[in-house]
Length: 163
Image (cartoon, rainbow, N blue to C red; front, top):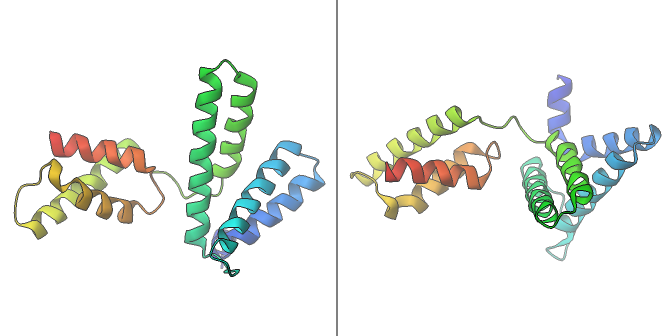
């Protein structure tokens, strides 16, 4: 088993090991970010009332949600002239992104959306329009499986369905 596979086998454990490393090297920013991420993961595990161990896919969803929150906060801080706080949020995003799968670039995303539109169109038996956006988004999100932000997927689907 390669180190990448073992890291993927238990993403939460990998994050814990990185936290220990950051603490030993006295990297306060990384330590703080990883503690917040582990707290978010733990909160998700206990949100159902009983403690349930999250799968790696669930952990990736938590990471994506935390990245989205931090990006939105950074944008708000920048809009209000608080660049130092925006930079802190952005540095947390950079720490969290290390645990996400490789993101699709624009051409790969367009290719994925085109494939999904072809599949959904064949299943529907008609040319797709904007009224089919929900079906296409559901299939595209499933295929992208964390490798693209929902906002980017939505924009790509809209471009294809309108064009």
